[in-house]
Image (cartoon, rainbow, N blue to C red):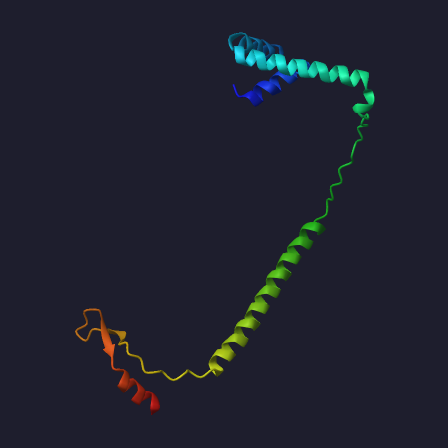
Length: 154
């Protein structure tokens, strides 16, 4: 048994909150385990000291009685709160969609307005993927950069 469980059971037994079967099982466990028995004695002594202190100095335990009040549960039979939430979700989705559309449209206009920067001469070879003329799939072909620049000038 874990020590936390043992402590809780001993405290519950002290306040009389255990069922008779559970109290009997706790007593059997304490009788067979000396370590658990010594822990139970320490907890019972602590509870006894606490009780004596509170009886001698009641101002230390400011316990006020709580009045139980019946809180009425209000349930509205109308669907207005549910419909209001649904309308708010739909409005948020519509605004998000329109905003995304407008931002995307303005971004596409700025992208098309930008001109491609001329390619710089690079010491590295360039490659591209093309279809195999024999029809067997794809092949990687080296691109001649000098011919590309001639074609881009035209």
